[in-house]
Image (cartoon, rainbow, N blue to C red):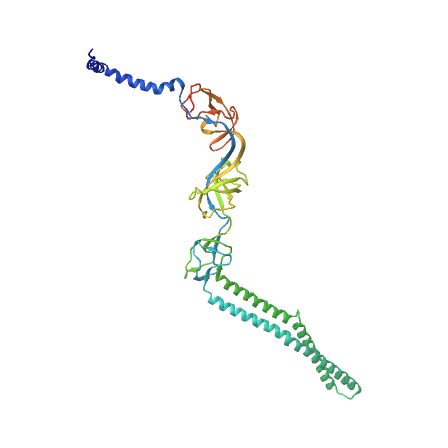
Length: 412
């Protein structure tokens, strides 16, 4: 038997397509859409969930501040003078006592030599008083005493001779005058000796002249020392505003020195967080220039007053092991740990509805989302402690999930 031809069948299919092609354009897309969305409508959307887990929860206060040292030293001159040399550069590390500035000192050296000469002269005068004048005064007194004794004897003999009629009244008056002169000379010698001895007026005057000369010498030496300005502490020279040839005046800052001490971080904390901050609290800090290199710090100072302009409190943190990249006045971010809970139930804040009020979550129960009220404890930057309402291992929908309470859901 001859085979039936395939041409009539192909013709029939082509005719069918020409008659129903418009319906195909509608039905095929509907079937495709139904295949995609039917499971979602019947079984619910596929959502990612957050598990309730146990762990450690930290609460922190974040602030921004700057790096500083506990204090800075302003370097200036104590005298007026012309700068002869500045042997250091800005940014240089200097040691204790290292010369920073030298002033012209020719006149001061001349004044020092003059003061040294005055001291030598005063010392010579005191030695002359003790070695020469005092012994001479002693000898003079001895001589005056001998002269007085002889005059008294002469007067006694003359007085006896005049009483016996062998001497005239004039002769007696003459020896009396000699005796009186000898008494006056002895008294003068005694006074001179007392003045020259230790504690006497001449000795005291010589000591006063010597003390004044020595004080002038110390003043001249101090003025000369002022011509050399040295580092009072070891540190880093962070500012310099003086050059060779400048005429400097007293009490004018010429340099600023940052002492070689552990740096501090100075931050401003919102006064609303003041009750959370306490001395000794640990913190994690990082310089904005090196965010990948965090370092540890701890709260060392809390200002007792509040800045009314910024509604903030100044807090200082000590850095025990500063990284080598840390520089003066760098901007830093500080994360101060103010509370810590260990082994508590934790849930991300992104899964909690109304965490500041009557908090609730959408918990996955089987294939449905159920609204559950929860009681929160400690709250951190990204998570909160669950005190009641959820158990460990339960799964919760994110707060931004487009799911209503009671709706069917599927988890991956």
